[in-house]
Figure 1 (cartoon, helix red, strand yellow):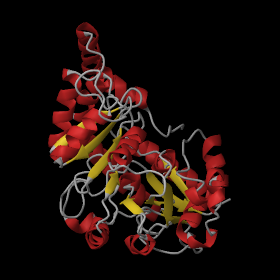
Figure 2 (cartoon, helix red, strand yellow):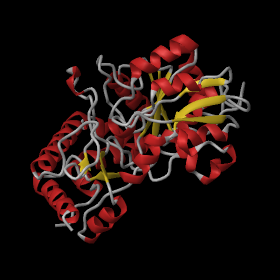
Figure 3 (cartoon, one colour):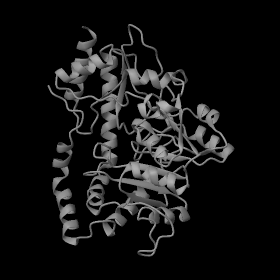
Figure 4 (cartoon, one colour):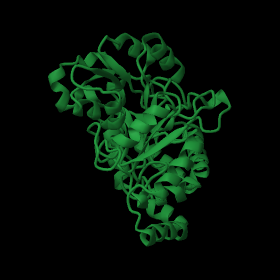
Length: 388
């Protein structure tokens, strides 16, 4: 039975009437960029994310770039980032002429290690950027301690974690100085193209960011500083407003699917369960662990990805492909191993966790519409591979 990694056509069919109506509403208005549709989305997202200001922008990458620009980050500055993440986290630092400082991640959550962040602080450090990877929060408490001790601001990369809660109930993106979100179509809340969001609780910073996204212009044709074209399209905002209403139930469905995967993997004897365990003959598959599962919050993990670790990962992926089962590797090359950063001569041995993850992580289908029969097909196919 074929099982896609993601089925956006199925999602669209379930929302077709509402989405089509929203698109036609924008077409009739001919308010195509920013405007009332974007303002309405911003208000709805600010309420959902528990922040004072939510500013719609052109992409998650541009949200990060804007955050760095707003802090005046440039040549000679350093920004601490995890080495295991999507490239935009480091790439936006480099685009401004600053230096990304790579830090290894925790082996359980795959998120940046606060102790290593503290060790990486220098007088040139201008920001700390945790990535709430795969849908669960980085160690906010540990990172806030570092920020308070050093005075370095926290910029949250929440591109994969819209709605995720830290153990105290706060949603990620509402805790640091700024939060950056992506609405790329494959995200839990996805647009019909590129779109993003930047959040803050700082009134003055919000004003600056809104001006920054529109070429630094205020009033019209007057430019106090150089910004960029980071504006959000009204069509994307309209689609996101429809989908946002369904986000809580989609999160619940992803958690349900993750729990079913874990139950089946354990039942089939492929793993002892979630947690920090080692590979051996009995534990052929390491399963993802929700680190805040016992906190009592609802969205402790929204499972943007369900990422297992397995030996012979590349062979397994080829085997799954031969059976029509989708999977993806997030991410095969950590930042410190990327060719564009070879000039930095960063010692590979400094990143043992990220190096190991890059060799063995594999994301399995986890989208909300996935059913139990499809999940069982994935698990049985993995079992068949491991028994060969």
